Length: 288
Image (cartoon, rainbow, N blue to C red):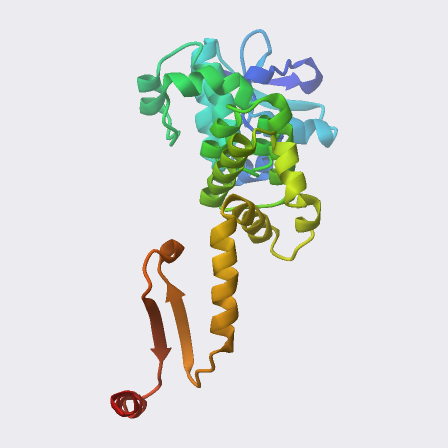
């Protein structure tokens, strides 16, 4: 590997070697501070950029005409590992960036070598490999690029028709959920579609999802709306319970809970008291 000064407009970007998606020119300054004196861009003898795309984009944007670069005769597989690890040394990669890297590197090697040479943090199996193209393009790819969904949710989205996936993508584009609630939402919608023999669009219309998007806590509102539709008898019981509990006046900080799905008749009451004396007073009244 040697260095030389090149005209940047003669370099050839190649998407397969890009790691940051979208490009993050701000990483150029971080690289320069952490690795002073080291050229950030690596190219091959054919002037294809192997790594350092964020720095390249920074220089092009700022009208830099020339830069010192490393030149190395490196095969594609090694270039992909170089690009991944050099970028990971500056900033953690997103799920989407990792999947995009996997889509390219799995053409040249197996999971064992990828585990050995990167800190990927993703379980690589045949199902994941078969879905890499779908996960990195279209609606699912857009959601992952914007960090709107988890990998588990993305994998689930791949099982839906394009029509249903479009409706689900609309939810995740408008509302943020925890990873577990993303899956809860998909479970309830799938159950309802099966029970009602309809599609996702019809289910969302039934709960008036457009109005729920405007709620202060839209994620809770959507999940509650689906729950009411999925478990109507439970919801009626829950509303009756809340009404009755609201009538009870307890002069202490407290919480009252029923058993899951009202499976038991027993009720749990917790009192939060600030002294042992109050406990004694209540105890005496209960004995009376």
